[in-house]
Length: 149
Image (cartoon, rainbow, N blue to C red; front, side):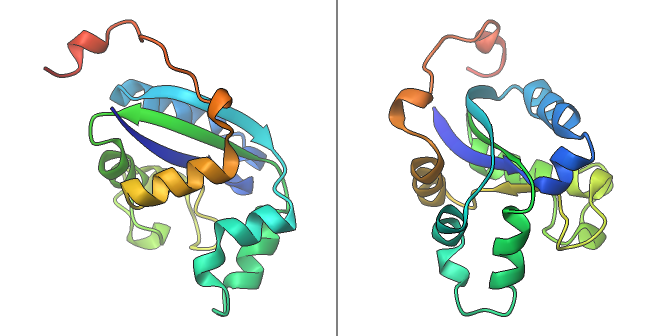
């Protein structure tokens, strides 16, 4: 089963949207394998956004992700990386479909509710940044047999 890393950003936590977003992911049929509410320090933020170092939005993004708690999560499911990205919607909420997470809750590209890995390789890297192996649980979820063959 494929895994992805999703993070509910400070705006989602501060606006009380954690439950609403998690409900959507659960309703889709994804399985939650790891989750923690945490404060991101500068070293972790810089590691997460390392590919953007030197770009104009790097400092504001790093400062923003450190500004309030986030919810870091590992989700499992068939094609979970691509499906979660589709559920999230376009990075800029102004361009996101109305039914997507960002289309429903986001107002600005700098406050777009959620981060999600963009590939299986990115998911593995990001999961490794935020989670120790023992923090990711393996279990059989009731009803899995009804999701796909």
